[in-house]
Image 1 (tube, helix red, strand yellow):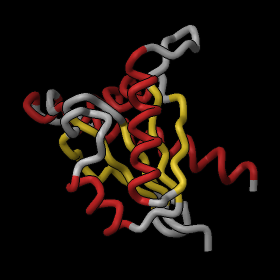
Image 2 (cartoon, helix red, strand yellow):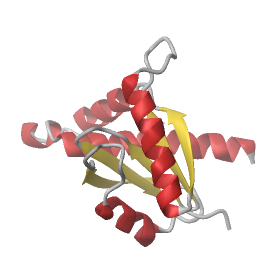
Image 3 (tube, helix red, strand yellow):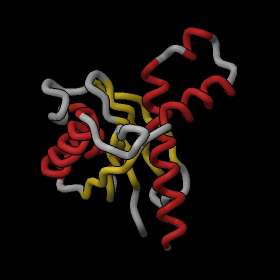
Image 4 (cartoon, helix red, strand yellow):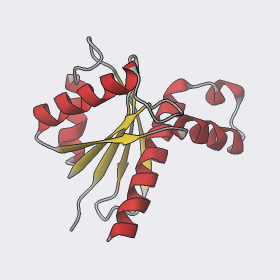
Length: 144
């Protein structure tokens, strides 16, 4: 059995979280956790969530520039993933997350949610993590 995959939409204030089912078919948003201080340091809350979900793999989104280059945020996300992998022993993969937030915002608009919910950044971050995870799962299934 392949095992669950967890995806994280890294941010300096909030980290969006999504997880797959153990068969890696569905990507579901799981909410947000607060970023650590410094933000690249995994928090006890996030480490607890990793223990609870028991992922086989963690995918950390890299906020790349549109030209494909890495900026400061992408370097931070990569360092965050490195530290998370070291702290949990779980394989951690960095993956380009360009346009996941745009796709999450489209989904929120399409749901016709009230304005207060549409402006909820935590919802947006969790959905962006789910978009990242869905992309990863589809690629993973195509390679199998």
